[in-house]
Length: 398
Image 1 (cartoon, one colour):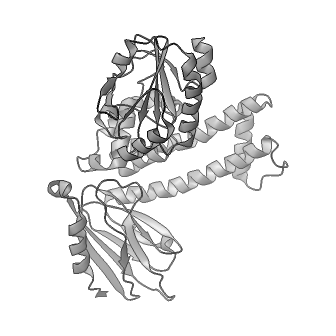
Image 2 (cartoon, rainbow, N blue to C red):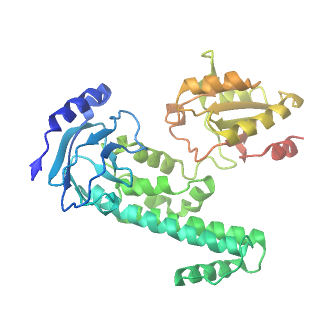
Image 3 (cartoon, rainbow, N blue to C red):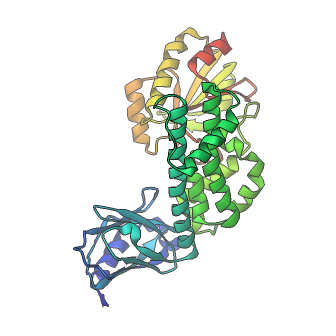
């Protein structure tokens, strides 16, 4: 099998674009893409970072294709991560660490490729298969739910699987009421990915797939509270990650989420977050509560439309409130400070605004599953309400 000659070029480019800050901790990777048994013309292939990659990245690489050849490259990365191989018809991802990786491409349908690598890669492929099954399950579940709500004509379910789901929903209903149906559907919809996540924590602790299972799970505070009874084994699973894996952003977020389980509930003390405003003046939660009976801490970002809408509603209400009774502190979690500055320049809210990147030290032990997210604090610094709407705030503060 002929080895193509582009290896030296790629290595030179890759070395130039790696971030110097990771040089002392970088990992050497070795990936070979084999082409075999191909009869059709091959589409152009590209290799790139996975979208969940942060920090140093390398540019999209065009891979020379040869029906009777292979392409090998070596380089350095800051942490183990997923890479993506794609053409115009399909895409696959695979995990790279210090173990050699081989990708066997037999057609333009990359999903039929064979991949071999480390144990992390093997578990990732199992998870990918399970996640596809989960998506089909949830789609079937939604179709049945939609039918029961009367959004489409009632029809015979074509598969035994859908009939089973239908019976499961009926067993949770008790009586045909929309609110009960929505609750039943919601519980079943969350249960499947939750079970999949727990499966990977139990069977493959320390695996990238276990962290990705949590990342793929639609995490909300309600979902996290549902899993609180499993906290011990989830925390135990988090201790199995290697130091290299802890630098991966998906794994890092997994650790942060696990550490937040059971924290920041109604009645809990809120962290005394201290951050700078646009002028560099530091504002803290405790300092704001010295001057007001209640403080609304609101997390948002410039790209979040619902956040802007919610803050506009608060702005309309804000002038009618005595500052000794009610104050607002908004915390932007934009990745880039400039995006925050542009947004507040446009909207000009009348309260103090501060910023922290999502991975900033002030938020290192704070769980922000989705935004908008707000916490209403009493003068003792304890959480009174979570995600209060404007109407709930008005009723509470009147």
